[in-house]
Length: 159
Image (cartoon, rainbow, N blue to C red; front, side, top):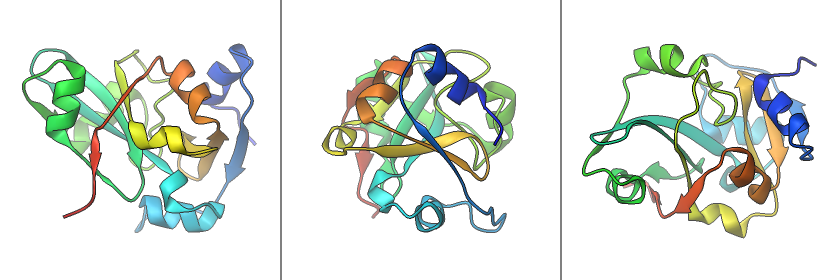
């Protein structure tokens, strides 16, 4: 199994994690599909969303797989008036990762990272390892430390 930048960062910090491979279906890269393949509840799958704030520029949000990003909440937490999700075509140039394989760890540049507060109720979570078909399982506190993330209410139930 290939080591990714995200895994190398966790190794350097001596944080424990587990890598889990799963079959990729290009037509369904959803958190729900990933959850089924890695046998975790979707509430423990954290998806990474790249956004841009009117004051801060690029920021990163991690939210539970079954929730939606709350743009106003992210704006408030990140010190912006307005936040928009970046267009898909900008994700790879900004992060070095492709859709379905965006990890909050090991991006091309270090962006301010925000994780939804629901994370604190989980014992373990799963994030993309930086490749489609590879997830990292780790403790929420370790992700918060490794990503130097701020935690707050940035997700909402789908409408």
